[in-house]
Figure 1 (tube, rainbow over the protein chains, first blue to last red):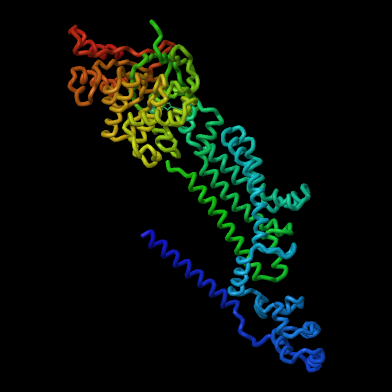
Figure 2: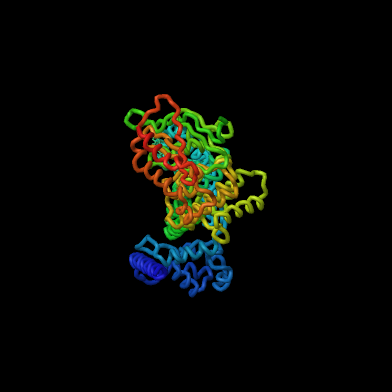
Length: 333
Length: 302
Ligand SMILES: Nc1ncnc2c1ncn2[C@@H]1O[C@H](COP(=O)(O)OP(=O)(O)O)[C@@H](O)[C@H]1O
Ligand SMILES: [Mg+2]
């Protein structure tokens, strides 16, 4: 029955995926408008022929969409087509020509799934190339983002979990800090950005701070809640065994509150991942959020969509890791 | 008279009654428990049995009065006073064995890991738990098994006083019988002092040396201390044949059914509230001793 259910749900997922891709493909389909070749005037053709370029070569490159100016450059190389192709094509020789594969089809700026699929494949097969500061593999950019998240998040955990313990164990501290938490918690992470940029200055540290501050609250409130609601019986067991406050915290309260704490950590990592993309869009430089912004500005929507897809996948993996952790600390009463 | 091993002196407990006044659960309650004794306390729900036990355990502070054990003031919980809670209070993320070693490690911090484990296993075996079950989590154990683990945890710590709050209240009759037998077996091997709350008359007669009877609250008091004049070892099928069994049982039923209500709500006016000793023994030679408890019942009723 269960297996049957799994199978049926997988089948449905697959159907939805195929339907979605199909609709996407159909709506971005552009009918073939014939060769995109460039029409040369008689004068231009004569000029190229005068430069010792073979007529069949002129026709070949023109049919590829190479403009007259570039054709002149090719002609000035004084190389045969075979030699040019053997050297890796005209692009490898530094002559810029339109890219037929990934340029958005005229009429529809939005890339089709096949185009995105190709780009995705290229990204996945070569994720770590570096061609200068503005052109790095998405694997490297993702690494920057993850590093920021890990640092900001770890700092938040270091503060939130001990503080949450304190708040959970002491009703007095809870009452004293509650108003601050209630006011600070609902502030949008991006609203912290200007404050951070102004006070900290450094943009890198500012993004770390924003990750820190937005990861803090779910961990803090969940830890406090989990600790405060540990069953009195279990605390009494610790008391009748004369455990010190520290040993009670470690051997009774921590395992008892762990599922609630991990839930808070899971919410936090989700928020941190949402926020890093936005923060990198604002701050720029490196990171997958910056990539999305950069590709958008370059109108490379196909590459932008690939980056967005990867953001989703990494977010899912982060969540799955915490789900696994959650299962490890769960207990049945 | 020498002070008993455990001495409860003028214990008073009041709570706010929720309407601005105070609720006096009991007042100036005074009684004692001897070393090695098995004492059961019987009374209606809400009369204050758990409140007394929590004070003995050191988990709660009385409004006034003191508890002394071995002549020393009891304040706060201690490893010398082990507690078995009604809801078992096992730590659900630890296996049965780990729940017991948790206690043993706290009691004997110097012991090696192997020694702690061997000790824990020994006490688990005493309550009939061995083999694969001891590696299960509490959620994978039946209610009876959980209570066995809880008893093993308490006994393994070899406390001077063992406190049990309705330990078998949530168990079915058959399981309860088996665990009662195991409890008595462990107790007779260890000679610990046991103070147990119950609402089951037959259980109290089977287990106790002495039964303390509590009147209904508020202003409840430990009104009588009934000695169980049935020799050990006791067997549940045989004790019913003993001439004292039904005499004692009737006395207890009578108390709980009628006199606990009649005696309720009497304020102490500052006097110590000590229980009256009752000995019912039909096997004793003087013939007047047989009818004595019956008349006693009548006179103590003002
Ligand atoms: N913390 C408390 N605050 C107020 N009232 C309490 C508290 N604990 C117990 N009581 C009251 O004291 C009385 C005795 O309770 P308890 O000792 O639990 O009874 P028992 O164990 O005999 O059933 C009850 O009326 C109960 O409502
Ligand atoms: Mg109770």
